[in-house]
Image (cartoon, rainbow, N blue to C red; front, side, top):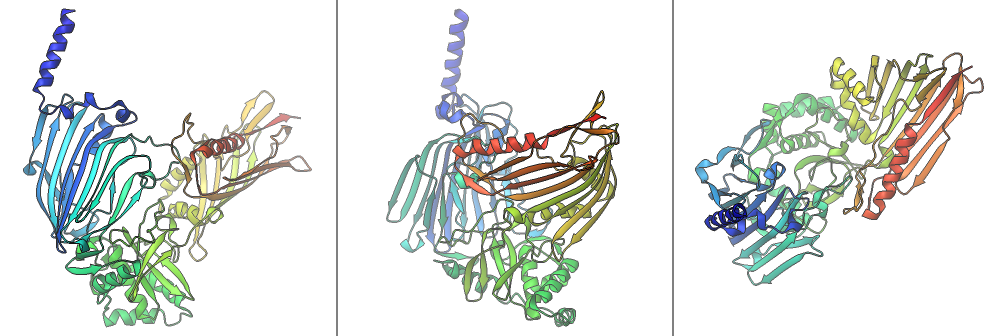
Length: 637
């Protein structure tokens, strides 16, 4: 008992020495620590717009990190450049009892370029704290202040909850402005059911949200930005890169961007103009010319990031790209556009939010912050053809999953417009696998396989041809990882860039594929496109289900049975069709009993579904996996 009271006394003394009881991790509400790697105790930003050319930002973020996976939530970094001047930056660290154990001033932060090695030069830099915790939990308090002459550079969005496995105790943002014309437009998203305090009055707008529990990531849950509580914020009257702007629509924004970012940057040397005119002189159409120009750019330039100019958003001139033979997405797109214009083909610089997850621009919310990549829209016969000028390998007119199926901003001299890029939907993402398979009486299989892909499945596979022979064979052994003792004898790869079809012809063999049991052989019929993926099971699913990309697989295998064996048992044919897609399998024994023809179709449809649908989808995928692993039993005659 004495030891117990001594422990309580010692704990009390330690607590009394703590500098801030609010930072004690032991006092955090258990609702906020559940499923959380870290808890944001306070995330507070104050923005003051005093003129069209001056904006001051103060930010304080206090995070209690519960384990090593929560370290990334501290966000102890701040970027700066020629327009954004860092005034102060500081970090304080507290132990689990709330006692300060570390203090870091600006001189303790590392100062590095804000871009990676693929960037040739950039105005942007970052100061960051490289902190290694001694123990968990700990609390990090990070504060900074900076000014920015680009009042168009408000944060693209304010997230009250940053990511999965992170909870928020309190998050607030306030924006004050000395003139009502500086008042930004704000759109709310996913704030329903939260403890929100919103105050709007003359000269200021503020939001505070408290006690948001952590979200646990679930299989096939939507992208976090779709479900997170947030504010979208955009200025209407602002200055960016020294140019005034008043933006209400995407048309306004496009006109401003063309006038201030693109105009006058498309000049080319006369020698280059003569070269591309000579290359295209036999072309019969604008699209034929565009294909020739695109190949010229792919063969004669390379990608290097260049983050300078007006806010890092202005492309380097076509003259400079022509001279040095490199550029980033902005510079290469502008250069290609200039080449196309030189041969009489219409093309337009286009902003897009690129990434494997399709993200579209908001039609009623024209924002300079929207977009992280530039592509080109080529206009012909009232249709747009899309090209990504940073790719040296993609066929003309094929975007792949990086920029497909989303709303983008096409920038023209008289203004901008929102347009949808080409979509690869469900059956567009096609794969057909055909094979002639022979099975020996010892369980060995040998197969000649042809795999044909289109759409996003083409995008997933056509880069195989650029690998070394050893890496190509490793690719196939990984692709068919469920086949033991697999040996790739030879292969042929054909990339038809005109029809955008990739064809693979592979000859393979594997010992012990079939199991020998006495006078019987057991083997899985689907040897070459088995789908074993079953989403995780949840007793209480919390999030919606999103199938981001649909696809369609067709398979047809002719299996030659070993001499002296006959079919003893064969699975039943299967057909399942529902809102998620279709799955069918059939088995047919030839009249002479010497071979089995196996046919399979699997269609998965893209879609967004309520959480209640998840179990149905999981059951569908379980059925696919179970049937894909079905076996035929052969017996000696």
